[in-house]
Amino acid sequence: MRFLLFALTACTLLGQEGTLRVKAKPGRAGVFVNGQYLGPAANFAVTRTYKVAAGEHELRLSDPRYEDFTQKIKVEAGKVTEVSWTMQKAAALAGPFGELRITGGDKFAGVFLNGKFAGHVDEFDNFAQRVRLAPGDYELKIVPAGGSSSPHVEQIKVGANQQVWIKLSK
Image (cartoon, rainbow, N blue to C red):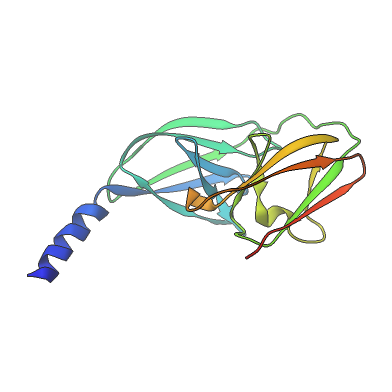
């Protein structure tokens, strides 16, 4: 009897969410549903999927090198909702620049600078990867993919031709 009750409860809960698959170019674009960061659209060119509650939502794709894309979507319980979009390149910024590198932690965690999405940790974590920033003061916020735990927040100062390194614990 307990097994039957568990199975019915599981079926009911599973039926209240659907799957979101976003095929974005570039694949590193951040996927947001109703303002919550879920993670990147793809990892090594493989499209990622996310469980989303059934219903109508606002989808936003964001990448600092491209114009944001926003669209209303409807997710049906137990089904896959697929969205494909090629983002439009934003105007290039002029230097001089400082650089931010981040190592460790959740590689799909979202990186936000002064409240604007800048990418995910995996984009800033090796010798050739970094984000170029105009000199100034920034609030750095690192939000775990899916918002599963508290964000890492700190103030940083970036100077021209300076590298700032943030090392996160795993």
